[in-house]
Image 1 (spheres, rainbow, N blue to C red):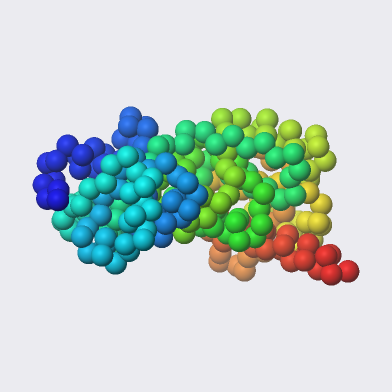
Image 2 (cartoon, rainbow, N blue to C red; image 1 turned 180 degrees about the vertical axis):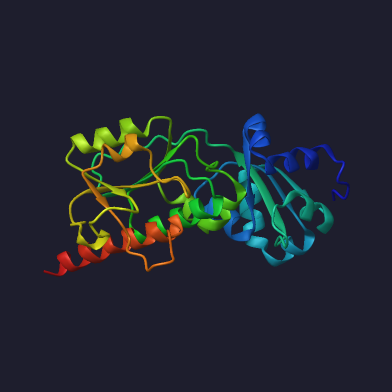
Length: 264
């Protein structure tokens, strides 16, 4: 059992809390039973699994599965587990896996997609990923100047959906948008001060929705590529909605329209 915070392995895992540490080691964290289980179910290649004895006793089947997929497993003390986790109350297991620097995304037929530009809040990104899977999104493109896709809070907020959504990190969102626009996909930009409301759009057409930075919104370059600009109506005194909430409204309006169309 590892009990010292000075253990070399523990020191290395703690460095994965930062973006710099993840880049240098080419690894990222999987925290908690649910994320580990989802990773194992998706045949994720685990590097290290650290767990407490109590966790091992509670989850013997998952422990065996993780041991079969991990290069190294270690029992650690509660204190050590708490130090390598980023949560206040970890549930007994933390794993590391190889970092995904780029997730290429080539969809032959795009029905519904999301483009996220300069998103900075990991909780927002994780929630958007979770909502996207629930709403049937085909794929998501994230600008490379956004929050890290493998930020621990992104993975936790996605509640496992991270493993189920095709996601690409792009250095050129303009190229992505132009490509799908040339294929007849309608490009929808979300802006605060336009006339058209989001539910007035015909989402039954193949659609790519553009969402921007939490404070600054979309760049003019991306907006200029859109076919339609829409807004979410707000009562006086409210300047904007959280970007994750905005994405949910748009995606479920698309799902609503498509479900109705399928019944006709």
